Image (cartoon, rainbow, N blue to C red; front, side):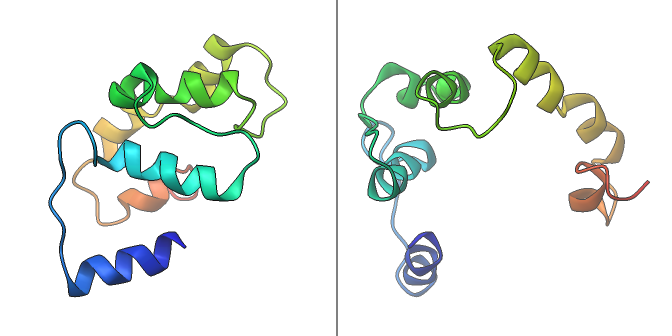
Length: 100
């Protein structure tokens, strides 16, 4: 569904609305179409996307064996490695630790 939507956007671009239609609120719509647990796209943790991962974690929508949110954040934090490879043509591989 996400790929179909993105293909539609390629043909007919849409403009984001700061509150009602952002990358995070649109992801909430897609998640709601695929899960029993529904996300209110106007939840503060959706509108402030720096907290969206915590909301997904609290809802059990992040598939992991890690049960502590702070440990989860630390394990998947990529800021340091992202800065290291920011200008690399293989950035997409390097941030996933697939290539040095």
